[in-house]
Amino acid sequence: MTAPPATPPAEPAEPAAGAVVLCLPDPAATDRLGAWLAARLGAGDVLLLDGPLGSGKTHLARALIGARRAAAGLPREDVPSPSFTLVQTYDDGAGGIWHADLYRLHGPPEVAELGLADAFGAALCLVEWPDRLGGLAPRDALRLRLAHLPPGAGEGRRAELAAPHPRHAPLLAALAAAAGAIAGS
Amino acid sequence: MDRTPIFLGLETSCDDTAAAVVRAPAGDGAGPGEVMASVVLGQAELHAAFGGVVPEIAARAHAEKLDLAVEAALGRAGVGLRDLDGIAVTSGPGLIGGLLAGVMLARGLAAATGLPLVGVNHLAAHALTPRLTDGIAFPYLLLLVSGGHAQFLAVEGPGSFRRLGGTIDDAPGEAFDKVAKLLGLPQPGGPAVEACAAAGRAGRFALPRPLLDRPGCELSFSGLKTAVLRARDATVAAAGGLAAADVADLAAGFQAAVVEVLAEKTRRALALAPAPVLAVAGGVAANRAVRAALQAAATAAGARFVAPPPALCTDNGAIVAWAGIERWRAGLADPADLVARPRWPLDAGAPALVGGGRRGAKG
Image (cartoon, rainbow over all chains, first blue to last red; front, side):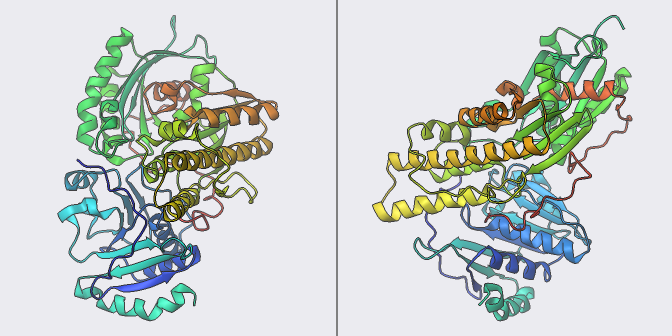
C-alpha cells in the first residue's frame, strides 16, 4: 500500500522498441489522435493510458469515446473524469467502452473486484494509471504514453504508442504514416 | 397516522457505507426533518495509502459493513424495523457493486417487513438536502460541488430537476485533490489547499479562469489543474526548487481561480433561473472562500444562501432517507424489484453539455 509516485516534470523516456512517437502541439491534435484510434480499435482491445497528472489521458479518452459514439450514430454524451467513480461505461453500438481510472486503487486484487479483468476481451477498455494492473494487463494491450514537453518547449504533448503484440503491427505502421496529419503539420 | 413517518436510508454508491434514520416533519410540510441517527462507515480508512480516499469498490465490503451500519443507526435512533414507515436506498448513479449491495439489502428489508421501498438518485438526495436541514420551499437553485460532481440544478419538486450547467471535465473536488498532489500537500486536498492558500498571494501566478469567456453555466477544471502544473514546473526550472512561499502562492492562485469561476457561474445561473434561495451541497462547499463568494453572489441577486452542515454535504444515509420520504409523499415509491442504475442522469431530458467534454481544456 504505497502512495502513487509524485509527478516529476516530464522527461520523455526512450521510446520502446517499435513504438510510434507523435507530436501533439495542441488539444485539437489530441482530439485527432483519439478519433484516429476510435476508428481502428474495437471490442476486445485494451488501450493503457500512461502519463503524469495533466498530460491529457482523460482528454484523449474523451475524444476517443466521443468519436466512437458519433460514428455509431449515438447522441453526444458527457464523459466525466472517472477518477472518483473508477469506471464509466459507454454504449458504442458494439461491445461497449469501459473507461477506467485506477489512480485510487492499490493493486491487482482491487482491479479484479472492479470487474475490469472480465471486461478485457469483451469491451473496448481505456485504462488510466495502468501500473495498478500489475499482471492483469493483457499481453496484447496497446500502451499510449503521454508526456508534457519540457518546460519552455511549449504547451504541447508527446505521445508514444507501443504495441508489443504482433497483431497490432499494421496499426502501428498506419499510425506512423498518419503522424503528420494528426499533428496538424 | 398519529405520528410522523420515519424512514431508513441506505447509501453505498461510492466510497462510504452509510445508514440513517430520519423522521419527517409533521403534516406534509417541507421540513426540516429530524436526523434521528446517521452512521457513516469507511471514514476510518480515509488517511491510508493514496492519502485521500480509499475506494470501497467491492460489493462484499459494502455488504459486510451495511448490516452493521443499519443495526447501529436503528440502535442509536432507538427504533426497530417495526417503527419504520419506509426503506430508501441510493439506487444510482455510482459503482455497480456498491449499488447492488445497498439495493439488495433494501429489497430484503422491504420484503421482510412489507414496508414501501424507494429508490433514490444520489444526486437528488444531495439536491433535496436543504429541505431536510432548513425546510426551504421549491423552487430553489442548487450548486452541487463535490469530488465527483459539479452542476447547477433548478430544483422544482421532489422528482423535478432542471440542469442548467455543469463541468465538462473534472469535478472541483478532484481538482483540489490533484493540485494538492502536484504541490506535495497532504490528502484530502480540499482542506490542505485551503489552509496553504491562506498564507499565499493569489495574484502572483497568472492562472486561467476556464470557460469564463463563454456564456452559460458550464464549468471546467482540468485545464486549471494543468496550468498549476505548468506554473509549478516553470518555478522549479527557474529557481531550482519550490519554496514554501511558492507552494502557498500556487495554492492561493488556484483557489482564487476556482472561487472566481464558481461565483461568476453562480451569478449567471441565478440570472437564468431566478430563485429565492441559492443552496449549496457537496464537500467543496466546506471551503470557506467558496462559501463566502457564493454567499455574496446570492446576496447580490437578492437570494437567501443556504449551506447544510458539512456532515450532510458529503455522502451519508440521512439525505437518502429524506429524499425517500419526499418521493414517497409524492407517490413515487418503487416496485419490489427495484434495480440499480449505475448511470442515472438527474435530468434525463437534458442534452449533453455544450462542448460535451470535447472542447474542454486539456485533461
